[in-house]
Amino acid sequence: MARYSAAFVWAALAYFTVGILMGAAMAVDPALVGRLRVAHVHVNLLGWVSMFIYGVAYHVLPRFTGQPLHSPRLADLHVVLANVGLVGLAVGFAVWGAGPVVAFFGVVEAVSGLLFVYNVAGTLLAASRRSGSAVLQPGRVAAERASAGAVR
Ligand code: HEM
Ligand code: HEM
Image (cartoon, rainbow, N blue to C red):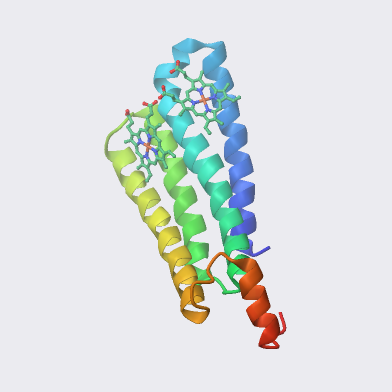
């Protein structure tokens, strides 16, 4: 597994742990809901759900399509920006609520998400240019590679 995929899966497990603990804290003491709810939402949805998807998608999509990831360097940058953005966003939500800190780290997080869109779209488009409409049809790509004598 590439470094960026492993980093995202490990980060997702860490955010899931933190998200569960925040949820449990709010469940036990509802007075914390006002302060923690929005941070909990984003730690779970951007940290656990999105980062798990990033890690698995970066691993699986190049293999499904037989097309190397468009830019591994941008995927490394995505790891850094997504994590810096999310930690800043979550701390900003919990400490100050929506405001300049949330705005700054929210933009960092948004840029990181767009890097993922660009990188995955570039990979899928390159795969479809190479093999007609075979994107996301692993059986067909594998058959084409076998008939072309390609060695994986
Ligand atoms: C042990 C795990 C979890 C516990 C104990 C927990 C608990 C809570 C609590 C107490 C609230 C505040 C409810 C309120 O406003 O009164 C909340 C809100 C929320 N949680 Fe969790 N949560 C957990 C996991 C998750 C996960 C895994 C996700 C998403 C993947 C999630 C998504 C949300 C969302 C979206 C809200 C906000 C709902 C709204 O805006 O009203 N939670 N959670
Ligand atoms: C760049 C990424 C994101 C930024 C900057 C962002 C920012 C925000 C902001 C400023 C709010 C309003 C918070 C408040 O009421 O004070 C919000 C609410 C919310 N966002 Fe996000 N968000 C992002 C991504 C996401 C994603 C990907 C999801 C879901 C998969 C999500 C789910 C939610 C939900 C459920 C709420 C309502 C929370 C509640 O009031 O309980 N957000 N977000």
